[in-house]
View (cartoon, helix red, strand yellow):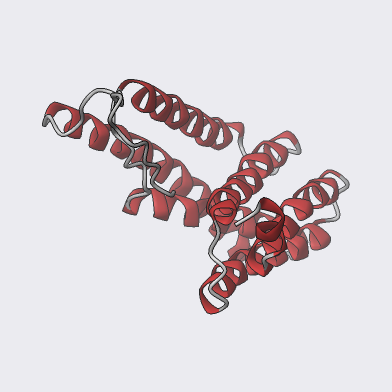
Length: 204
């Protein structure tokens, strides 16, 4: 399917909307308009849920969407954590852990991609819990800055510690899973096609 046609698909339009929302969330956090930031963050979450639903209902799953959706999700989280730390709403310790884990996984994935045939970088249970914890933590922080309820302060601290714990657990589990496969001999060197081989590309 041509790129322009993929861009016009409803799910990809929602993903693009999510990308557009990100800088406005940041602007409102910096300007301490937390109610607006909270509303936009919730809107981004709704668009994330709807784009997957529409892709299935309308049968509009595209290669662009497979790449664009996780990029939008990662951009949202990877920008809000540093911004919230810079504005003293989250401790730098949790942000450094989150960013270090993401960078480390990118480096490991790049090394495995360049030197082996291993391509199974799908999120495991720890990774999924970690993503949920990060989203919940940002949500609770924005809610706590918007409304003065005591339980939000407790939930905020719980979210921070949960995010830190699963950031470490998920990062270690990814590396261990890839290392086990390599040691088990299930990972070979990079594929080198010969003159008779036909290139094949698996979709993400």
